[in-house]
Length: 384
Image (tube, rainbow, N blue to C red; front, top):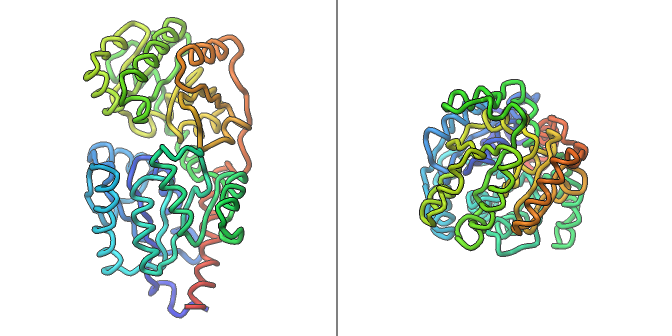
């Protein structure tokens, strides 16, 4: 038995820091509230991604309640940002207490809050554990590995994650296969997605330009967009593809700034490209669901396109989501322009990989997390 009535227990602190976290935490918050008995939560937004308009839009799109605490950390180097989150998060635990700290994904806020909780002997719950790109040059890979090492409960999206965790010496009983919580958000939001034609019209672009089909491009990864010698050839490859299929680009601020800095912005100011500013979740979902193909370097979009059955061309040398390649619609092509063009031509000629939706990507992941964590916390509380 728990030493206190449920409503008197400290909250499970749920942490969001960057855009992908919102889609993962929103269904978890709802599932915790709907569980019988409810699991009390405190939502903390670290402010790692801090555009207020975009934050407000995402919270509204996902029906995510306003955060109880906003740490307002802002940008900085990886070291500065991680340290600042730690400094500002610890007083939240002092003030509110914590039955557990739940973190998602692989951003700096994930590792920072997990470190604070672990050093305070508070259980750490990591959602989306065990994913590995096996590329330690990626800051996210370091965050994943370290967060998993200090987590007490590790929820996984695919069974191969358990092999990764076992190789790293993590006891198998700490890992629980629950499926992909981001697909919960996708399935719940799909009926509200904004059609691509409506989105283009609202942006002052002619929807007739995509009547014969279109592709979607997202680029933001520093390894792709921070260096002219890498970004330039990628843009040239996309230019070739755009002559065959109109490409809609929701241009990330980092990418736009670098295109301007390198003098490349004019290369996508051509009839084959339709440029949009960063979009909300429902807008991006509408774009993705109606696309003939997606060209991206985003991890989350690899998963979303697999769930939607849309061919995805991933412009990266590796992926931490191999199930989207092995079972889904994703093709990993690297950054070689010829490979990007060949993959796009293949999709146009054949329709691309059909794929299938992986196990437990069924919209009920958050329910499984709530059911398991409730029982785990009761057992943990009884030992405390």
